[in-house]
Image (tube, rainbow, N blue to C red):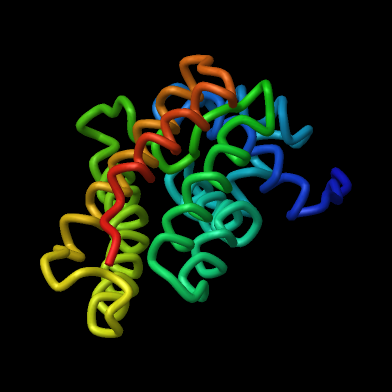
Length: 194
């Protein structure tokens, strides 16, 4: 009888995270995952289920490890500080790792087959949750007088998320950190003042 191979589940998740981040959901094969994680395919299935279930766990891990700047930003005293923190921390995360640039939540959804519709919906919900939190924070900023009464919190949240998502795509395409910082500066120049 064969001996059960021991492995560190967190290390396997981190290895899978890097692969999904680099290749997206569709571009990642089980061979990629087993090679990166250093475990056999049956062990991967046994521990995590199918590829979709593993991806969902990876997305949770990504949120825990790399998306902490969102709740940090939402606690800042002004809407402009929120936007600034989100923009610059996103640039840092999107360009930190040369072998997997951009954002897992964006890279993972760039291409998808019909069979992956559930994953696409998961990623839409993942991004929508952040946008909803940002919209609520900007509504509070408007109510507190930090944003002008003419400000549209839903549109501002959508604008900021569009810039953040666009910068993630640009980072994946090889744009430099310096260029992304110039994009952030341009976005902040359009930010409404009181």
